[in-house]
Amino acid sequence: MFPARSLRRGVVLGMAVTASLALAACGSSSPSKNPLSGGSSAGKIVIGSANFPEDELLAEIYSLALTAKGVKVTDKFNIGAREVYYPQVKKGAVTIVPEYNGTLLTVEVDKTSTAATTSQVDAALKADLPSTMEVLNPSTAQDSDSVTVTQAFATAHHLTSSSSIGDLKPFAASMVFGGPSELQTRSDGLAGFKKDYGLTFKGFDALDESGPITLKALTTGKVQAADVFSTTPQIITDHLVSLADPKFNFAAQNVIPLVYKKAMTPTIISTLNAISAKLNTAGLLAMDKAIGVDHDSYPAVAAGWLKTEGLPGGS
Amino acid sequence: MSFLHFAWSWVSSSQHWQGSGGVPHRVLEHLGYSGLSLLVGALIAVPLGVWIGHTGRGRLFVVNLANVWRAIPTLGLLTLMVVLLGFSALTWLIPLTVLAIPPILVNAYEGVAGVDPDLKDAALGMGMTQWQVLRKVEVPLATPLIVLGLRTAAIFVVSTATIAAQIALGGLGRYIIDGLASNDYAEVAGGALVVVVLALLVQLLFVGLRRLVVPAGLRAQARASR
Image 1 (tube, rainbow over the protein chains, first blue to last red):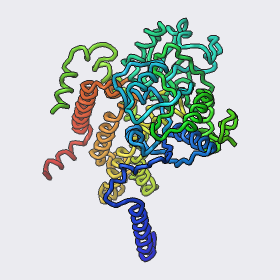
Image 2 (cartoon, chains in turn green, brown):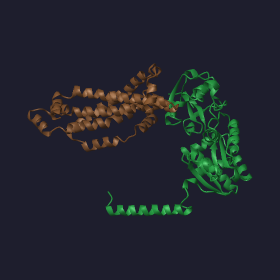
Image 3 (cartoon, one colour):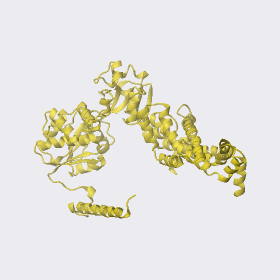
Image 4 (cartoon, chains in turn red, brown):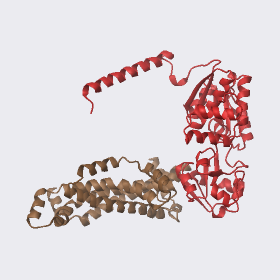
């Protein structure tokens, strides 16, 4: 395809670029240090995020609001999974990360915890987090498993967005529920629906985790209710209704800032708490849709929400 | 050895052999998905391969297409079919048929194209029509390769039909997916073992089929040249 000479030139150019990048990388820190261990950041505010869109968006909101309040922040979004960023917060290399209280508790802090409600989970976090870290106030916004039906089903059965899972009781005997296979055996799956809400569905279809197969099964009527994550943009685009879970069959997953204690100032704490006070699931869902479906930019969506809520950093 | 240990402990438990979730029922479902996909694949790919082998027309295009075609990820195609078609028989039939076609097509083509031109000349010289040459000379001589293609496709399809469980259907994939979801390694290993055994039995079936359909003359020739 390519003449040999230009191919060779390309290889040489590529090598030169790689070498200069490698040198630049070495220049920033001493070469003997493991680059994965992170640097120290005395007094610096570093906002990190996990590697999925919603968490990055939340980090963007924190960053814009704090910057507007005169806090000098460094953005380090899209770091990776919790296993990667959590140790960084613990030692202060990252100072603020938007978290979800339920999985933070059961994945990192206390794997055997049975705390379910928002207040139980937060109390457990406050008691058991390593001493260098703390969580600030939780928002009401949750990205959790939810029992979801179509708008058409809801209308036909007189259900609204404030109806709860328990309101399915009269219809459950004729409904097939869809979700990932583990819900058949897990305590917050079929067993939990029965224990908490007295529901026994006619059948169960093993689908994916709130992905395209589940959504298609729900919208085509293969299943009448399904486990859909509460901030899935298709809830808006496919006209779905997530039912409330007042008994916390699914453990709480409130958005909450996880912070490095020593770096906190009253300004930072009050700014982040003001954000949590305004953030709810519907607002988060709308922002997720703007990013995931409409492909708006993260800063634009974050600034737009801050402005609507009358918070600093909005534009 | 722990795989076999777990697999055996699961397979040897009599409770896994009963009812609609038991091994016999799941094997029948599995063979249903596999058999239909193989049949549809064969109905498309054998005539097409034979025709291309006979005429030489579209040879390069079809053989290359079949090879590229092999790279289509079956699981991805399944999800795409769900999004496009919802949940019908075609949702699983299309990905598994797509998987079955390339080996059947390429082997049928190679079998017919590889027939000695002298034999075809001789057949035409004896006054056979093109159709008779195809039916009486080329296809019989190509049967060993055609059966080989079917056998290869059957192995692919039997071992991949486990994906039906992704869309809430049955088959042996049920054990693998449900076992993984509930962290039940014995169920995963047991299900996988049954798939392997089934694939081996299908192999044997095709070895028997080969004995039945390959002309006696070819078999004698193969024995003599051994």
